[in-house]
Length: 119
Picture (cartoon, rainbow, N blue to C red):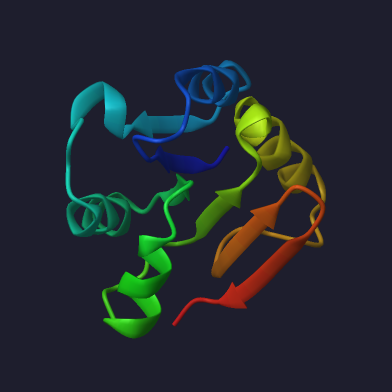
């Protein structure tokens, strides 16, 4: 079981799917809607959650401005029509033990995935 924090831009249908299979998922849009990016990042760090987001600002906060990093970040750059597939991607990745999410800033596009080690 993983612990995730779904940013406000992650559809609740993804949150529900991850919860349904037993993951601990907190959702910004459910309990802290409108929170700033630094506050969301700090929460992910404090609660030890992998951040799921479609907002590229977190990479800048972590790598440029040196904010503390959470256990992992998954930054989705899917085309709009695929935004409901975020949870399915996460579940597939978790099933592939060779590509863990912990310790990585993972950028996911429609056809590619790129990873960068978190500081």
